[in-house]
Image 1: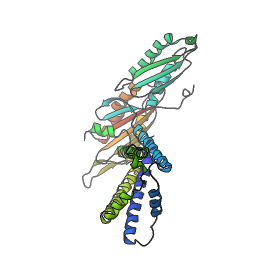
Image 2: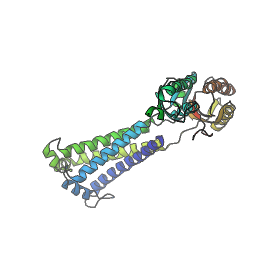
Image 3: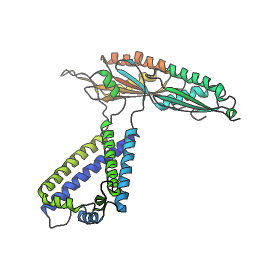
Image 4: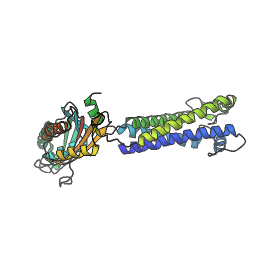
Length: 178
Length: 200
């Protein structure tokens, strides 16, 4: 995500620079040599075309839709590329410690899978929430869920986290479907 | 600037400006597209929607004020060029890894290169029990250098113990060896993927 935003940022910067250069060049050239044609861009042609299109025409609507959609995607991408680090308490004044959501999820996942009667588990984690989805054939949700909640709580207790994430555990068991 | 703020900034490569500018461009494009659609829908007047995109009224106005329009367009173009180039090179600039200047007395300068510093701390950190790999980088500026340490722990390592050992042994030793009071540090803890438990 971060790499993508950095790449987009580079491309956008270049696009702004090129657009500015072309604008200044074309206007200056037309001012200096009004009789000669445009320098690089066929802008008189654009002008005639744009003056025949009204706002309800399909090309204008399609272009507007694409621009709006691209803008939305761009804004969401860049907005979502924030720092997701899970912060830990600082062992000393000038030392900060953090871990990645993925590492936290794997620590929880290892502990959950090590429990008896757990066939598999998928864990997603962020600084605020840890979600565990475990599958079991031998125990139903009522039996297994409290134990898993305890397991996850023990893992989180062992970590010096700044804020304790909320834990949700879901057990998927064929015994509950009967 | 306090050393804890420096340490916080060392956590990751800063790219706030790039991100903000990208968000802004996205919002501007979204608003422009939505506005054009709104005009086309006739929400800003039914006759407005029927007029040409390049409105003769606007063209005539520009023709009446040709001198100012031209000067304005050229100035705008040059400003956009300068801003775009600044943005472009800012996005491309590599992260700096500053050397640590311990003594700046003329004739007796003492500099620890960023490679020597990170190599020494890395070797030390990898001695810790449970740490499989470590990566150390000097980041920040020459005036405010900081360390960024990434540790890959083996499975089943007690994170809290590593967390304590790192400060009490590795970082303290580094500070003592360098003879500095503070060495802002950002530590990132990862779980090493080497092992069989990843796919089960």
